[in-house]
Structure formats: structure tokens, C-alpha cells
Length: 341
Image 1 (cartoon, rainbow, N blue to C red):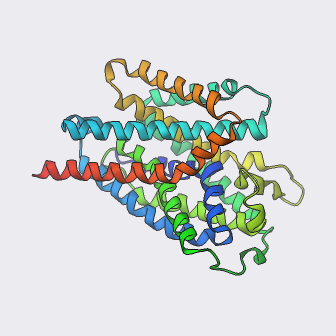
Image 2 (image 1 turned 90 degrees about the vertical axis):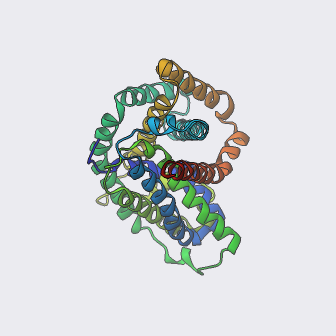
């Protein structure tokens, strides 16, 4: 993957917003959500720049090599990144399962929904970082076009009254929106620590991805208003039901929402790759498959139409996101400082 663009980061950045992130931050500030999202985008950029600094500092070494060279602190950092990868896999599979079972295949068992998705992700993850990057590069133009098409199609349904009056959100609510957006957008970037130091356009892909998310939030609020935006479980999907292409093509929401599916797939695949890389290499395949199986069972037993458990995951997301990001960066800064001395 040397001298390649950080295309994967485009998908990672958006992955936790679908079904979780957007609806969560909209609950905090309603019609002022886009203001907090813009500020949160730049706060998240600081975390992303922290990741980029770590990636460049690795030089020609892999993440596992860096961690192996540092005994105690390396083990702690490995565990943190591994747990972060497991959390990301849990979140992406859970979002996918809830979406499919709610809108597409409501009577299909959880395992029948998850197994094909997991098998495809495992196949790509086993192919290594180069294969994941090739898949992401192939999906990028399609995902970008679908995202732009979705936003452009929704603009015609705007009602400017839904944004008035502005700046009515409480400072505490605005603060929650800012840190939530920053955490949710930057947390998947923890996986990019596997990138080689020569990766290009790292921050640019983050900004492009978050810019599209901010536009999506703006469109959702413009169409639904502060009341309806908090009613729907997947507001970014429900708003696409308003889209009519060329004045006669209806029910295109499933096609346009493929862009979000790409985000979930790339993140799930990269999470599996990260887990396989960080666990003991002698039995890496078996351990990774075991972890995936446990996650699938947890989704089936604890979260399938269990609203209380889903709410816990829902509201814990911003704190989990920021926690993993900040702790990981601080640990790596300690490792890099120790290396210099």
C-alpha cells in the first residue's frame, strides 16, 4: 500500500454516523446540530492529525513491530487498539443488522443477515491491507457519487423555517454535539495506525468525509425539522424516501443508501484485519474467528430488538469513541518520546 492515498479513511470516518451518530447528535441540538458538527469536525481533525503523526513516526516499521519493541507500554497499547477494533466491529455489525432487519428483511434471523456479510469481510481482511485498499479505492467513486446525489436530491425538499431561530441550543447541548461529532468521526481512525508511513492525503479524506456528513445533517434538519428528526431511528435513510429522481423515479432510498453500506463494510473488514494482526500470530486466524463468533452471538442474544441494550450502546458511543482515541494517542506519544530518549 506504499505511496497510496488514504482512501480507506473516507469510509472509516462516516461509518459510525449511520443509524447511530447522526440521530444521537441531532437529539442534543436539534436544528443547531450543523453548527456543533462543523466545530466538531475541526476538533476531530486534531485527533486525526495525532494519528497521522504516529503513522509518520513509524517510518518503515509495522504497528506490531513498534508495539513489540516496547514491553509493558507496548502490551497496554496493543490491548487498547485491539479492544477498539473489537468495539468498531461490534458497532458496524450491529448497525448493519438493525438496519437490514428493520427496513429490508424484517423476518430474517440475525445470523442469516450477518453470516454473508461477515464471510465477505473475512475474505477481504485475510487478503491483507493491500486488498482492503484496492476494494476501498474501487468503491470510493461510487460512494462519493451516491453521497453527492443523495444530498443534491434532498435539497429541493428544504424548508428554511426548520432552521429558525438559530442558536437556540443550550451551551451544554452544543458541547455534547461537538465532542460527540469529534469522537464519532475520529474513532475509526484508530485502525489507520496499520497504515505505512508513506500514505498520502490523510487529513484531506477525513475532511471530505466529514464535510459530506455535515451536509447530510444539514439536509436532514432542513427536511424534517427539529421534531421529526428525533422520531426516526435512521433519519439519514428516512429522508431519502423523499427523493424522486427525474420527477418520476421513486423509492430510490435503497440504492442511494448503498454509500452507507460501503462505509460499514470497509470498517468491518478493516476491524477484522486489525484484530487478526494484533492477536497472537501463532493462532491468529482461529482467535479472530472466535472473536467474530462471540460478537455475532452477542448481537443475536443481547441486542436483537432489545431496546434497553441498544440505548446503552447508543449513548455510550461518544464516550467510547473519545476515550479510545485520546488514550491511544497519549500512549503512542509516550512510546515515541521514550524512543527518542
